[in-house]
Image (spheres, rainbow, N blue to C red):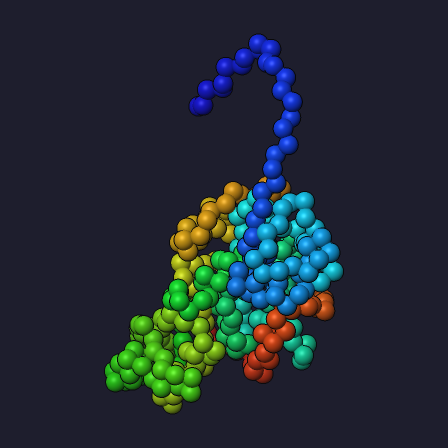
Length: 321
């Protein structure tokens, strides 16, 4: 038990308050910490002229203080001058949902299920196409999301793949040595045979990049059809066995701090949370789908339509049952 400090009741001289100089911080850094994107994204956003400081269009490299009024378009932003731990959600995405904040076909999107967040926004760490299920990470930290997704960090992605048929030893070797795709050479860092029944066979593959539909295209190049694809790990984060399809869970501060340390990012103080929020950490829940709202993207060109919906009734891989 920690001893209480000894109280000193002697009178103390009264000193006049000295105004403290306002700390200036880089605008693009604060925008990234607020969850609006990576620092480079924020520099591009500022250069677009959509960000103002005290009514004046901001310039790249500008510094701001807590007294400044910063707006994106006409919306006032609450910037995190005192860095707090970001929030992190894990979602077991089912097939049939897209990972996009805007879809001209008005299909079901994972963003319609996310809980509301104050003073920032949820950023999806990578994507899964409409016919792929499994682990999807959301965070309020654009910097963390960028570290997980940027090719230079080579973060591992692990998938359970069900094929129609079985690979030969030569095909497995070819997939590890490299296959020529339309956007360049690609390969798996590892591929493991997980067995199967009848015509269906399961494999676990790992790669360190996130090109569009890369896993499916690698198998397609060898004439093998993927009948089910499921992401089971992204970097240090594994899909928890208790997180069933369509469920979410929020990671507790200790695990969020561990993710930041793994990524080599600054570990900030933990934000004040209500008792109800604290009790919900690590517990799975099924999110309620909200009515889609009209959203304004930071980069509208980033929203690309994905393939047509295809529901799956296939059995789960052996290690995820």
